[in-house]
Length: 245
Image 1: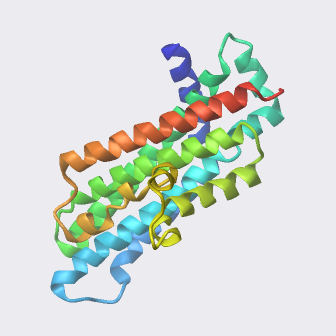
Image 2 (image 1 turned 90 degrees about the vertical axis):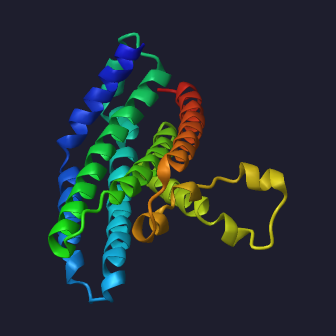
Image 3 (image 1 turned 45 degrees about the vertical axis):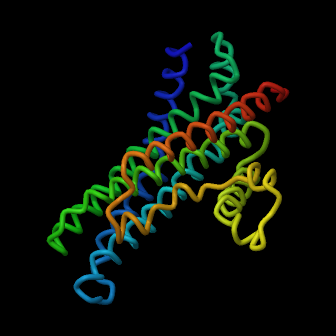
């Protein structure tokens, strides 16, 4: 089982890095990171913090575009090209196909987000003469959150086309960061418990202006990530298993 999962993940990873979208988004991330120092100057004590905040925001945007680009049409495209039938004919379960597909996409996202973070750290060192390893903490949070978005997209893509997956994924992400806005006067506890929230991964302030997130909070983020991904991939596997291919 593990071997089959990683075989699928490896194939997805290798296929993904061949796609132009990866290189285009990486290029975008590098250009934007290099352009950050051209922003208006701030006070000496604020300038580096503003740089870190903008760097994390740009990393998030580039990672989101990459995640949607890789996830939205992965399974629908494989079904359209009929390559999925060759994989499933080799004693591969549909749930293994779903989970393996997500693993491959998650790996690509991790490599790209790490690359963005290293570029940001390098620019910060050159321009501001400050070593900014805390940006890796922010990149870790972004990677985990994009892993959840990818799991949602993969789950939906087992039943729908790329356009529906894209809209649904962006709606999910928006709603997951809008719970307090949607329920300004509070809501029943069961609603707050079941309503999706990804606010745990919003670590811009402590990373940009504070001392970072620390190992305890990193553990909380990881536990949240595992719970969301497990649930979404379970639902996605059940949905794909019921799909008439």
